Image 1 (cartoon, rainbow, N blue to C red):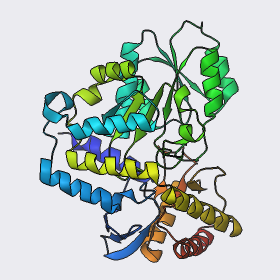
Image 2 (image 1 turned 180 degrees about the vertical axis):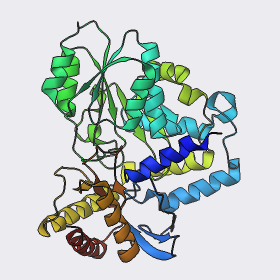
Image 3 (image 1 turned 90 degrees about the horizontal axis):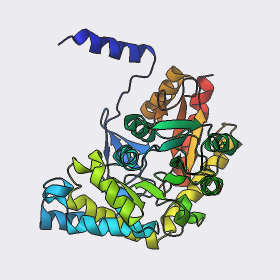
Image 4 (image 1 turned 90 degrees about the vertical axis):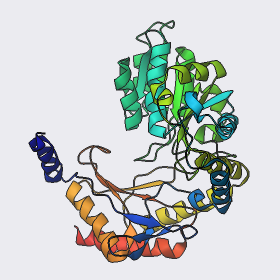
Length: 395
């Protein structure tokens, strides 16, 4: 093996200050957002987890998972087609479809796989499909489009004029698909969902929304931003995840029954992957049901988000302006962002992950803070004090 190629790759990543160092932590069930920093055994407060509503430690979900372990064992036993389809999995797909007011849903191993596999399948199914993709769509969407070899247009982020200019280049009969996110993961801005739907209707295009940062957090029953704005029925495909607000793992696509059936029949990422294990599925079902009926956690999280935003602004710490739960502090330098993150962890026991290229563009490096329902004002106040001190030192 010619190891020099691999050594050169690692050296280049380190020289560009974008080598990924993984912080090893031990989550503490029942004590989130606390965790243990395994490097020094210090108790830390996590401010970068996607477990927004602490459903990863929901006692009801843990009990459900334990019962499923006792009943069914550890694994699923195979792919969906070969012994891996449990009754629990069928129930989860039904509940997911109901959550989004759709006829059917298909569960994947992750949100990334759901996008990558579904987009490729759609291109196989629909002849001469042209894809219109928002400039800031997630890597999984970009991967799905690239791997599909479909003709594509990337429209400027949330720019409806640019999108319409691209759409009107084609006859109405041309098969078209607009792909966008509801809540964009870095800047936290909302998609122009109603306007995209209007353009899709005008130019006879299909719509595909990624709700991974919306499900569980928005809407009366946690159905995402499309549910909150009463637009879910007008969107053809809704993709989401169980790995963020629902506190587990896995992804899905919801839509028309026949369309979902065709996608699951051709999506390689669905066909050739071992199905989710019953214990995980049982926990997801419990959390989905719980958040359909409880808005307490959502309200607590959004209140904490607003409290932190107000405190940061009061201390002259600039954040990306948005209406969502995502809080970004732009740093603009990869090494500086890395050092700030390390200092907060090592000296203040706050874990905020810095975000560098290629997740964001070069020069757009940042800290992204995620506040959960379980953070409190003392934790937030202390974080802001630490940020003020560290950011001033880095000037």
